[in-house]
Length: 156
Image (cartoon, rainbow, N blue to C red):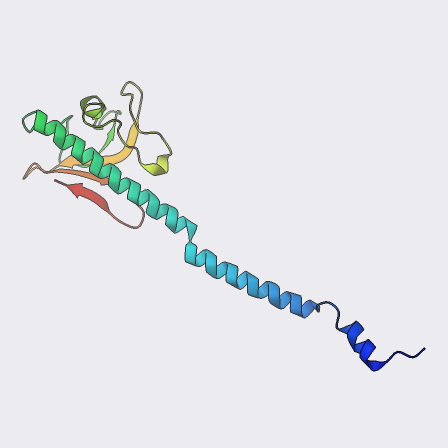
């Protein structure tokens, strides 16, 4: 029995060569890398956290101003000209009793800490946000020092 030339070609053409498979895998790896760089999950999470920080800073400042409106312009706590963390520790500014729950439902906490907002002032807390009052014009500034690649401060 003689095998024809056309049947030899057909039997050789079955399947892929190793080179073809490696080229396809290489192309897929390059495409995956491009997609990951374009999406950049770490940058997306950082931007989401910065958006939350910006919202939190505005909420704290609004609560402080509502407190001041009800107390003839007197700010809560012992806010100084030096930016100091809003926390219940010593040499820090404790705003919880003054603001929660009348002016804000719960004190926001920096999203990088993973802690829940502070709604119980009897427990230890640390917001991760700072507050100060200008010595010249008595304006209040709230800032988020943990912000990534940007400065988040609001002054009123």
